[in-house]
Image (cartoon, rainbow, N blue to C red; front, side, top):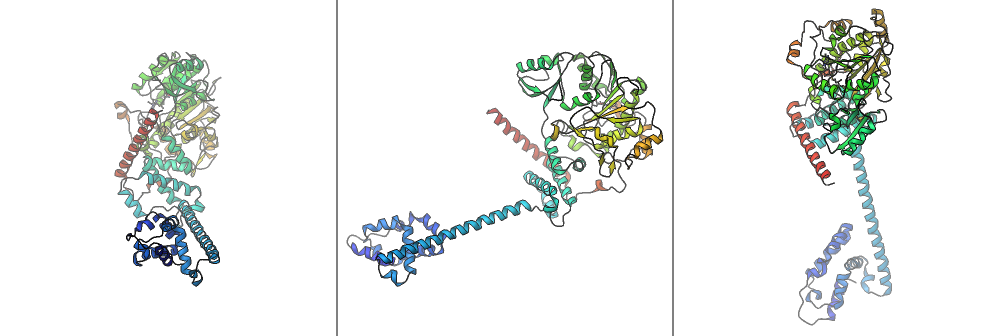
Length: 636
Ligand SMILES: C[S@@+](CC[C@H](N)C(=O)[O-])C[C@H]1O[C@@H](n2cnc3c(N)ncnc32)[C@H](O)[C@@H]1O
């Protein structure tokens, strides 16, 4: 049965009354969405719908005349879908269906409808599957294929404001590729290409200079480097050390808790440390602080004193002491017995040192104001039981406290720092008596990440003096480097300890403990023997000699974290005639002639303006984040 005949039939039942204008909306308006659905699902349905529309408008049928069967409303409005399919069936089914609507015709129509409906279902399912497959392909392609930016893209980037999100995504992608280089690398691209891009992106995103990021990238696997750098972005916990000369940790904790200080024991490795989560009072100005019951001290600064393990009644030198965090701990462990020479070269810093000693009730200490390299002349050779050399350094381990380190340190700074450290460590050793009954130890520590300031300095001391590396007595921390790139250090360097923010939740720190074996200097042969334990000498003998010969005042003394040289000190600096600087790379080993790596330039970098913008954008982002965090905290 065709729609036309149906309509006519309906129309014939009621031919009277005023002609009712055909309301198009009656037929389709309410059902439009379904029409759309159908046309999405099937071309056939689409045509049918069009035909229906044409029929209404063009046929001039009785339907339009308004002579409508009252049932027509039910039929047309209530079963539009059925109507459309039915119409299609009639169109396609030939004379049989057109002939009439008895029971058998109706059966075959129903089965045809089912068939059609099934076909539609199948088609829909097929399309859904295709769409899903395509989605999965896209996902697979997106996640597996990362393309390094082209030169043009980098150039374009350099001319745009920094896109931090894009940088971060690219950093993650490069790290992912480098972690599975064989499978994920872009055809023809070398590891070096990814590393270079990563260096650029890390320094842009986190605001490091090329030198520092270049050194760090060589020290750590890339995914670990990312953890380290991210850890540097966060503050370390505030810690305090109980002054056992005046208080017990439990009692102190109780009092502070009552004041609204939320704290806990620091860790199982310390019996005197407390970690402060938050406080309702300024933790550096409580009555207990004023009374010297505790010292505010980062967790890592406990470590060298624990390694030193000072004994009662000993003679001990703290060679670089201000502001006295470690001196006061040494005094507490010695129970104010024996004698500590607390030396500090910078006169202005003596104030904080003496203030802390007084506040903490330390009575066994003599404060000195010398360049540490002069101390053996003052205190005598082989005259003390132990020396703590918490050396002035580049501060590259405390980036979370001082962000300026990211950009302010250069290869030259590290070289200068290492030179001073080498001189200081030899003088530290010279003061210790190898025959001390209780001691004979030197502890060397820095808050630097640089191998040049750590392992290389200790390795140098092993060659120049009769000392050996002994365990620090700390049951955690990473072993120091014994080899790095083409350089080799004495194997015993693995007894030194490194501490990292991403591993130990403390500032980057290095601790080495040496035992003085003999008060005599090693013979050239002995020095050679030590040197030959592992190939590659770190520096020529001539270079080393010139460092040793250097006049006390002539070596750089300004590289020590936040400490600024005094006017007098500045005048003493730079005596180029007397000092022949060792040629080292930033990691402590001399710079091989063939090593041109540092001279590599990134061709498309517009460094200065870009970096400034990035730093600004990052700072804004941080401020925004802080603002959000504060809001969140406020609403708690
Ligand atoms: C890492 S800080 C010492 C921190 C201290 N040990 C503490 O725990 O509070 C290094 C110190 O060495 C001092 N210094 C720098 N050059 C020195 C030198 N040639 N001789 C002795 N001290 C020096 C700096 O002024 C600085 O106070």
